[in-house]
Image (cartoon, rainbow, N blue to C red; front, side):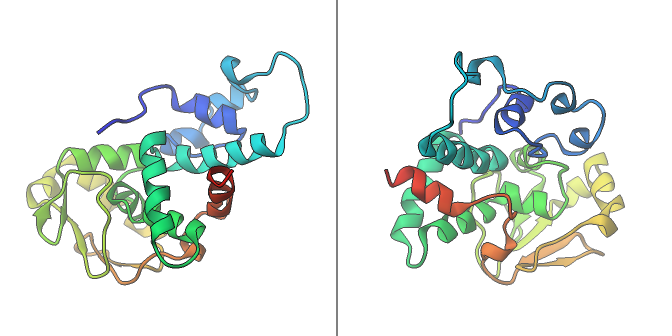
Length: 209
């Protein structure tokens, strides 16, 4: 499974805002966007000119892709699947991205960023319905139960996640048991459950041209 291994801070600088790709580091003085607010060198135009509508659509699409940590080829596959589903393609697209196991682990606070949550999944700390799932792109379904592997509850990762259980802002489509650090998917995510800065409509507009 491919993944982006370049500098995360360059993605934030390209978008021009914090995408929280490094968790708490993004809120500290170490955040690169605090020191260098301009776009990375490769994204700077040699001649300053007005950004076209196409350019704005690209930027909004990249904002969504960078936020969820998905490569372009995989992002296009999600879009193709969203098109085949009934309903609004943009809403379907965002629902699919929200249902990724690494995103669910992030939403539950198991990792401080989606990249960290992805690593936790890849290292086989997470169970779905009691079975090992180490594929970050796995899509959870209604009724699925997400929990920690029993052996992993003795690790420092688990202790840190459990210590911050009260500060967790779990979305309504997930039911979370704080005592057992276990969650159940009670419904599919809707547009109201998605970060308001991310637009599925912009993704549709970009790929529809």
